[in-house]
Length: 214
Ligand SMILES: C[S@@+](CC[C@H](N)C(=O)[O-])C[C@H]1O[C@@H](n2cnc3c(N)ncnc32)[C@H](O)[C@@H]1O
Ligand SMILES: Nc1nc2[nH]cc(C(=O)O)c2c(=O)[nH]1
Ligand code: SF4
Ligand SMILES: [Mg+2]
Image 1 (tube, rainbow, N blue to C red):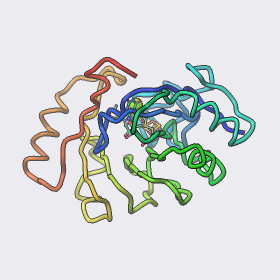
Image 2: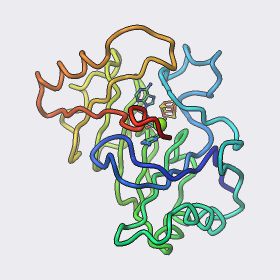
Image 3: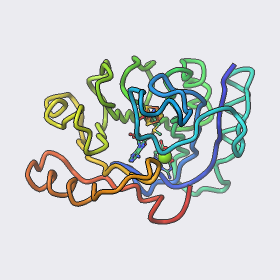
Image 4: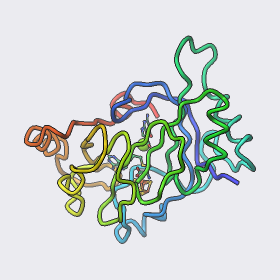
């Protein structure tokens, strides 16, 4: 059984593949935060911008097996899509609590390339085509290689220096959106300043928020 908060067709907003048409599958639940506001301040991840509780979002639900979820997701890809490769982004919540070999195989069988957005605390199954790891605070990072490391900045307890030596093709800093925290501050200027000081790191903007899409 898979529990999915929501699923939708949009443009990948973040990282090296920003702008690419994608089916998003947002799994329910996370191992670093309950999703309840009253638990936020005491959680390992405290700045989350996402509601991943339950399965009541658009195209959300509980799916009895990999084939049922794969059919549901592939129906969100437009037809005809010309020569674009179908692309699915598994996110959440923490997708590696649920994503398994059966679902990976089922999406590959339907012609999809598979991307994952993870907090890096759970070992991934094999067969993922694009792995984005986004470390959180003091949580223990077990995924030390992948395609992109995308660190939300600034996190005083997760400095970029801690991750700069890891085996990733791309290193991104993404300004922390303080809106979910009702916070004040200019994370954009700080993030730009860091990228200018340490050019290994590139700026990742959440372009879907700028564009006003999901
Ligand atoms: C909601 S998370 C879900 C996937 C996974 N749990 C993770 O943390 O990578 C998706 C992406 O949004 C980023 N993110 C979450 N809250 C954010 C915020 N307030 N500002 C900027 N990026 C944020 C995460 O770091 C991650 O890269
Ligand atoms: N458009 C869009 N791009 C995204 N890239 C990563 C997202 C996520 O929440 O994991 C996300 C998202 O929520 N929307
Ligand atoms: S690890 Fe990801 S889904 Fe979980 S609370 Fe943090 S940003 Fe949100
Ligand atoms: Mg998001």
